[in-house]
Length: 171
Image (tube, rainbow, N blue to C red; front, side, top):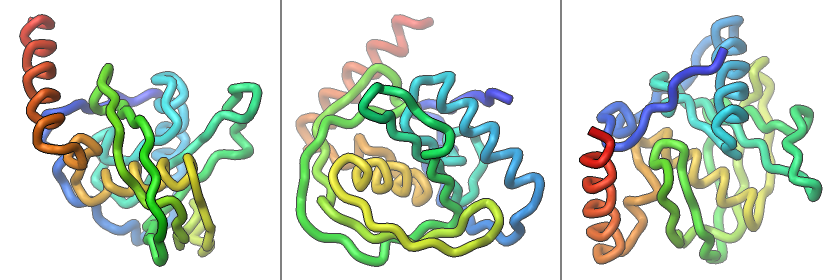
C-alpha cells in the first residue's frame, strides 16, 4: 500500500525514532509499504518517519547502470548504527520530504553500518560514495534531522525563503 510521505515543515520529521523490538508481520507490512511508496515517488531511499512511523527503519534502493531499481538489490535496515566513518565527499542531495529542492551536502566518503533485516538477522556492511550518502541521509531522518540542516546559514536562509514562497503559491 502506498502511504503518504510527510513533508517539511511537518513536526513529525523532527521526531527521534525508536528502535524496533519485535520483528513481526507489522514490520514486514511497513517495509513493503515503504518500498511501494518510495518507488511511486521515484525515490532511492525512505525512512519510516517519512511515512509518519517513528521507528528506526529505512530502505535504500539504488538504480543499476540501466537506471532500474531491482527489488532484489533493496536494502532494508532495522535499527541501523554507523560504527565507522571516514573521508569526505560532497554531493547534490534531495529528499522526498523536501520536494523540489536539492543542494550540495558534505558527508563521510566511507562508512560501516550494522543493522538488522526484517527477520531480526544482524548484518554489517561497508558503503562508500553514493551508497554511503544514501545511508547517512536516511539515518539522519531517524534522529529527527533533515539534510537541509547541513546547509550553510546562507543556503539555509535562501531555502527557507524559497520554501515559504512555494507554500504560499500552493494556497
